[in-house]
Image 1 (cartoon, helix red, strand yellow):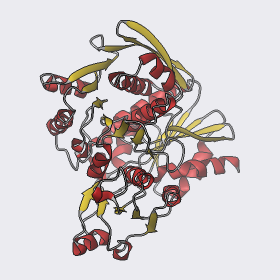
Image 2 (cartoon, one colour):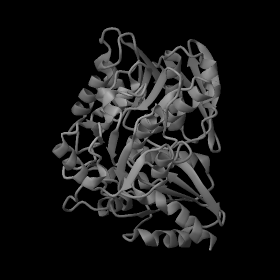
Image 3 (tube, rainbow, N blue to C red):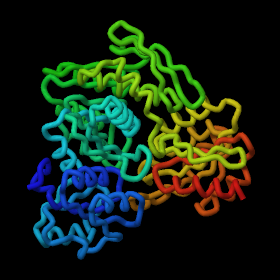
Image 4 (cartoon, rainbow, N blue to C red):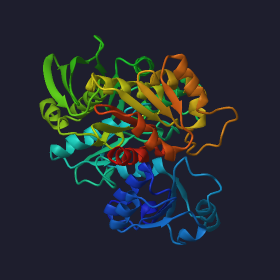
Length: 464
């Protein structure tokens, strides 16, 4: 057996290997010496990056892609029961392993930091990964987004720290046993899996309960869901709780966040002393993510002033207010925001970064269930833009829900006074935006689906 590889993971086959969560685990296993294989729906830079590490990546899903000697088949919650490779695994009696169990096995024996919350997980995990790497601690990490390019969402390091994005959407974060857990916020989302806030709290309580004895929970003192969670877990034995935020009650208090263009300067009060550092991405919510990362690192025993300096080297992650380029005096920025809270935070960050610019948004709703529950709030968030284009709903893993369309969002946006236009043909958007944009404007492509592909196309139209 290759060193550092659980027996079940020696020859894993990943269904959907190109996905953000799956590809990171596959990459770490490949670097540890596993014989990795898998399939994905289409070619991508991620698939190429995995092939460069020796992985076999098939395009399309077919029973023949699964080797008879695979040690396990790794799936995410997005894989449907009728997937031909999953059916073939049953015929061959090959064990099926959920992505979260595979990730949990990679953390064994390491000091794990698990980053959870309805929003901000990818950014905070990335900040920690960058800062710890900058300090020479050589961490392993698995992130739900790329730091710079394909294949940068995970790393197998030689250090004893593993930083992982912990996904609450399907309760898979309950599989981990971290030394330090971060809870950034707790809100009702993922409506196909959670029917109420009470279910959300129960799920997060289970996650917190898995922190190793003597470990630390780092949790927001500002967000109402996180505050309620803290109240519920206060009496857990052998758990250290450290709160952070702008609240006067916070253990680590954010004294001031000063916007400086596309960066922020943050001052915190830590152990009675003021500490100031720079966050190289705009927006108060990103500044607070950096503070959460700082507090988590301190919980592992890393000096705060070293961490603060190292956090300043973080320059962003793909799809989190990522500048795609500029043409004809118009900047095009990409945002993964798809929940109303995230949308509002990113739109406010853009407002703060460019006070004198017009803000044009191309928004693609993500999931029918989310639109059904939160479409009104999405429309209200779009009122922060000067003008918006709204696409049809990106279904991802869901089937349509009768009567649920983007019109729900558009009606709510118009009721809030927003200038909003429906565009049903995604291919028409670049020309529409090029006709709207003027020099000095900011264009924000927003959503968790393939709206991200439009940024380069918009830039091309602006240049022509």
